[in-house]
Length: 114
Length: 113
Image (cartoon, rainbow over all chains, first blue to last red; front, side, top):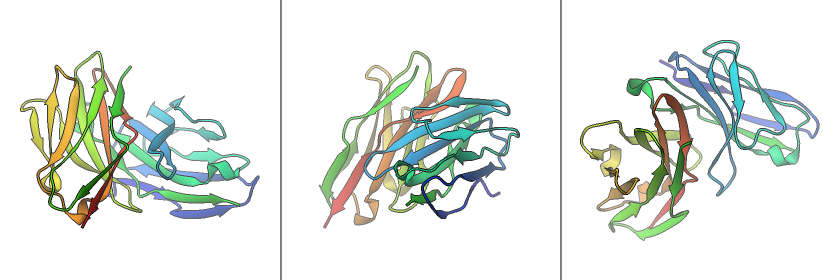
């Protein structure tokens, strides 16, 4: 049981480049999330999804895009990377019932934009 | 809409002292509550959860939390902390028919020798 898997673990991007952070879960969870975490700033929700084909903005969506074509995958796309996007990114998922409402997190992607 | 307020952004304590990390929530429906811990340079892992039943829940590493519906609180406690408890702690809530999780801003617990 792999849980939530994020790739890559580390990445350095140049300003203006694009990349996709991958996230996949094998728990058949409906809900998936992308957060960014900056030092001392807690978790900020970028985007979330309540099921395949349904996504919605969180509190800091600018500069990012997501898609949810399958239940398992929830990639995060960075277009035209900027230094302000230097951060640690976490993907998470949880189910849509009381018995599996606990969230599981990936190990994070540390992104540096230079 | 649900919201979570963690009242302290940082809590410094000495080793073997008791600690309480405070969490208040706002919700118009029945809630499920969680505490997560994040050790330095790691992801988040579940510490404990309240779904129903006894309002006092016990988690890993000697932590416990009490659900107080009248005060809309879910404070985390440990009677005697260790250096290894130094970490960031996040409170989270979900509930009703919407299982979308909402997290607090986190509390950095620093245990000093």
